[in-house]
Image 1 (spheres, rainbow, N blue to C red):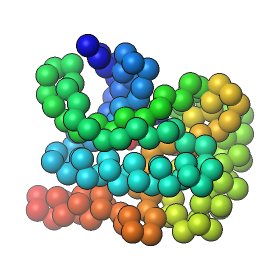
Image 2: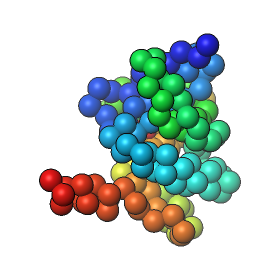
Image 3: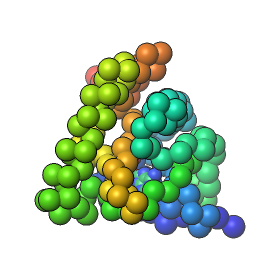
Image 4: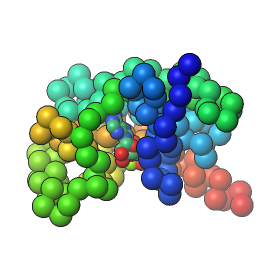
Amino acid sequence: MTTLELISKPRANGKVYRTSDGLIVKTIPWAGDKSERFLKREEKIQRALLLKGFNVSTPYGVSSLRLNDGAVVSGFFMEYIPGIPWYDLDLSQRDFTSKTIRPEIKRAISMNFKPGNYNENVILGSDGKVYLIDFEYWEMPGVPDEITPFLRDITNRL
Ligand SMILES: Nc1ncnc2c1ncn2[C@@H]1O[C@H](COP(=O)(O)OP(=O)(O)O)[C@@H](O)[C@H]1O
Ligand SMILES: [Mg+2]
């Protein structure tokens, strides 16, 4: 049986787990029945970036996932990137990652991607490469932002 270990920070937006098979699986608990849709659009963007040669985790697909408490949710499975997430980097490493990704972000923009929050969404890989993660708020042609309007809509209905 596959077991899950929560690796994202308690206050994080989504919940990201490491599976006992060595994969990463991301869920968006607050999005309810929209989470499958949101994870699929994120996967599309991640796959497009991978095909363009960016350093990103290989996406393996969105499918249903049974959490340790038995609840079934949608999960976005992807390759685990060994290394250090941004939160655990020291100042000089953060400086290095932000300098390294700057030309990559420019290249993405020149290819009509619209980056979301990127500075904190990096992993300094054990292989020395800097990986971009978390494309929830990115956009690309044909894949508009659906999450911001969704959040605005919930707020308006409060
Ligand atoms: N492919 C991956 N490999 C290794 N760790 C990852 C991977 N994806 C996410 N993580 C870890 O999970 C954390 C949260 O992931 P992220 O996609 O940024 O979710 P959120 O939407 O909650 O910000 C990251 O900061 C990182 O520590
Ligand atoms: Mg993030």
